[in-house]
Length: 420
Image (cartoon, rainbow, N blue to C red):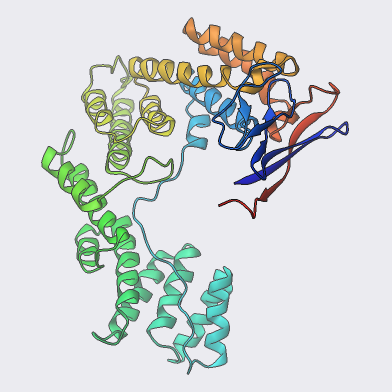
């Protein structure tokens, strides 16, 4: 169990949250008192104001992110997709293993130094050094592997793909290099897939073993293949096969899943088709616009929405972003209004908004909640705007209830060495 130290930047008020023997020093985010409770208590109420006590750590540092999330949803509701695009996670389309290779006992000093550069993240310097070493034919498969990593990291995928091939050509079955071979196959397969060589990628991923990365890449390529060569949503057996290949998935916000990848790919395909249609319409003098709520793209995305594995904020934000990017207004209203209501209700019930020190924040959130209920995202954004300008919230702090002048924040997190 961690121990959290809180302090005000304008007065001497401090507090701890954490275990002290068989007791826990708790903290009330509403009235900012510091009662002691018996260890094992499950979110006991504050004896002073009855708000839930923080016993495992404070929640208020999440406020800034929650406000940003809500504002991004509201902006997408009004047609501005940029704020939502900025906060969405960049989930990897393909997974690779870029663990830097270790030097070998017989490596000369120049190779050891170049490998150390890769390990330290100095990829541009490493690429130059490794290229010079290999030009002199002074390196083996692990040196080519290092060059592949450095080249990919410095934005030269063609060189990385060549280096993967050279490294693979130097490996021999039974020489203990199976792990490196799998990593090279993952890397080259991903590079091939990104440049459109799905056949080559399929060959590499098939030979990349059965670890999580290889299984996911095979699943992802199957989904990509189906979206690229067909219309609508891929057949049920394609989705089922990809899920079986990928194995267990996680709701964690940055993890790739078949449903998340599928939705993103379908949006990309629709965007390309829409751009092409707009260009044709412009050349012929038409607008290329109209009510698209019943379009094939809208129907396809609604079907794909139902294939998402999880219902987290980030999954629903992904869906909203897709509809907003394609200007599917009916679907934007539907998804944005529901998601905005969920987020604003979560913020409104947080313990820190119950206390008098947070009255200005609570009032603004209340006005935003009323505007969302009235389906007025512009008014909701206006209510939240002053909160997004506040330096204390931006720095993950809240107003101090004791002095009224400063703000309270976390200044130390320590691990309890006596905790089990």
